[in-house]
Image (cartoon, rainbow, N blue to C red; front, side, top):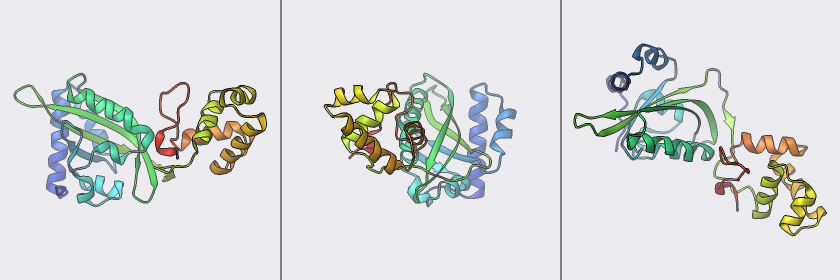
Length: 231
């Protein structure tokens, strides 16, 4: 499906967003300020969060051709650590549990650069009272430099995954050794390999770097590594 990205259709997408905001009793004047920010991306999704059409700015910011974007699941364009959370929010919109949501997210470009921003999802109700589509407004953070984040790279062995999860949870070397049937030296070996892979010097930095790369599942305790990063 070809994306509609002409200036006229960009205005149509903006008008749809404003109409949806009014329908959900959201102050359109406040939203108009946000939608007028430089770099504002607008998209229409169907109830299954498949992208129907987008504006020119979204094509430019996401670094993909229009034909690569339309027909895709919106969440497939996000960093793995954000996909599940955003998909749940879209599901609530599609089923009428919510009329809108606001979340921070990180978008991945094809060249593995990434950028963060604020996402607003709005459920659009048709004349029959059913949810017809979802309007998305995405505003990249001002002055946000491109970030090199881990993508679907299988960085970790299964043992390294378990060691990293243990370190992030504050488990001691002795406890990890017992739980993983390793010697203390074996645990330290795997920690050293993790430090080398993530290019940090100590355990606190290791955990911080893993979170910043999106290796851990958001909102999970004890920490859990996403399967995308495990061999």
